[in-house]
Amino acid sequence: MQKLIDYAVEMMIKENFSAEDNPTQNPLLHPSQNIEINTSQNIEINSSQVWELAPSQNPQWKQEWWNRFKELILWEHMNESQKKRCLIFLKRM
Image 1 (cartoon, helix red, strand yellow):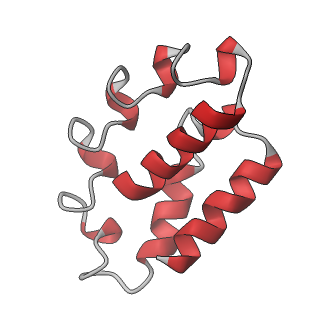
Image 2 (tube, rainbow, N blue to C red; image 1 turned 90 degrees about the horizontal axis):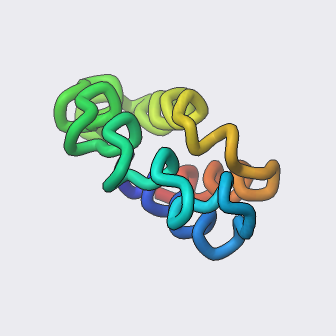
Image 3 (cartoon, one colour; image 1 turned 90 degrees about the vertical axis):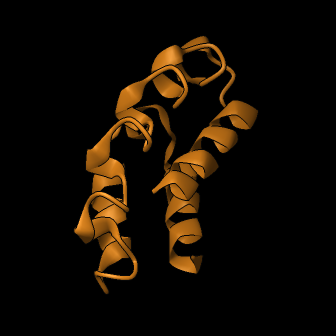
């Protein structure tokens, strides 16, 4: 899930100008500041710790990633266009 989270964070940094929605200004939205969205510190979103998220173990891993991604705090700070682009990014992986 790290790649999807990184993609979303980078997009939000470039496009979200309000302090509340920009990861450089809101520590809750930056993986290095918030363990809930840091795959190294939150095993629930770590694909090497959770078999449902592991591409090598679950043929439905993309759907699992998407379901978990929608539960992250990032989701509520993204606009619809950003959410769609994240889905496209995930589908292309």
